[in-house]
Image 1 (cartoon, rainbow, N blue to C red):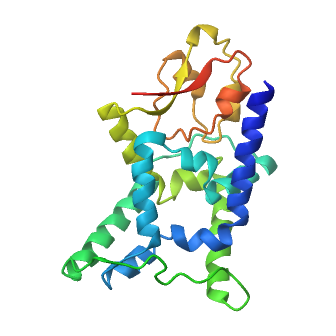
Image 2 (image 1 turned 45 degrees about the horizontal axis):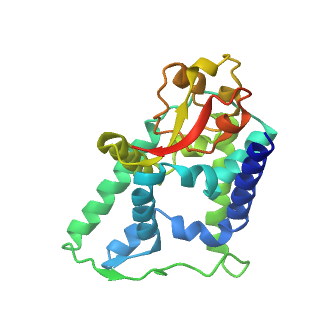
Image 3 (image 1 turned 90 degrees about the vertical axis):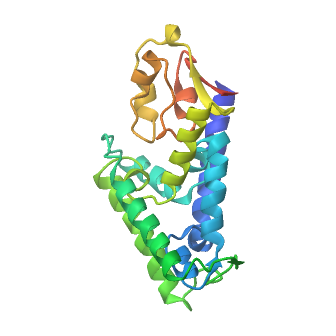
Amino acid sequence: MQNEKKRQVFRKILLLISFILFPITIFYLSPVLPLMGVTKGIINASLIIFGILFILSLFLGRLFCGWICPGGAVGDICSLIYEKNKKPVYWVKWVIWIIWICLYLYLLVLNNFNIGKIDFFFDIPSGISILNPQAIIIYYFFVTLIIILSFTVAKRGFCHYICWMAPFMIIGSKIRFLLKIPSLKLKVDKNKCISCGICNKVCPMSLDVQSMVLKENMNNVECILCGSCIDNCPKKVISYTFKS
């Protein structure tokens, strides 16, 4: 049990570090800069990172969301203050993502597919300071939005409703399930389950983990592989595995 507690402490430390670094990393995760870049034929940092997250999701699912994402860190901090455990609506973020993809493709066509120059630091300011009020406004806008959604719709409401990075990883996760690519997953022994419901309470994504256990199907694209259900289960029903 001690090892399980250490794992969650380590995960929370990583999330805290990601939150501390968020004023610096926010522009590397921007959905706007790729749109600005494509009009000038530039592939920038955030577009490259989105691609990397997609590739990693083929093998690690949404591990990024559970262990590193700064937005997720803010959501988890909010859940310590006020836990709104409500089943979210998952399709909203897809509407936002599809609009974003269509706009990107439209700008790409408008620019005659003239894209190829890689400028990793394209239009990225060097951190946030009082000398850059625009960056401060953008930073606090997103942090405030994450907080509001966490307090009004569900735990990690931003992840469910607005996150523009999640669809890349969800598509990757669906592909790995379809092609049976060896990857990090959850496995379960439902015979050990005593239906205590702890897994449901601790899941930061508000998933019905207990139902997944009883069905012996842990392949849920909204699962962020944080391990909270693993490390809080008194009967060790759930565990990590790496297989197809």
